[in-house]
Amino acid sequence: MKKHFNMIFQENVSLRGFNTFKIGGSAKYFCAIKTIDKLKEAVCFAEENEVPFFVLGGGSNILFRDEGFDGLVIKMEIL
Image (cartoon, rainbow, N blue to C red; front, side, top):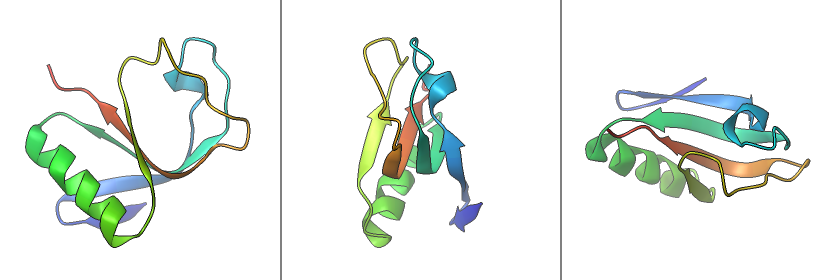
């Protein structure tokens, strides 16, 4: 896990549980956010670490590659 400000970013998280097809590799970094401020922090983390980021919703219209994603996956959990 990596910490940035008040957020913890998990490392090497399997993406299989985050899409309806249950396929795909791992994300280099992963976080779930519940507020707009946390979303801003997550994007700052990606920029400071020079990694791409991907914003994930419910996972019903996405397929992840078996090679995974070499960046940050931001799982939206804003209600």
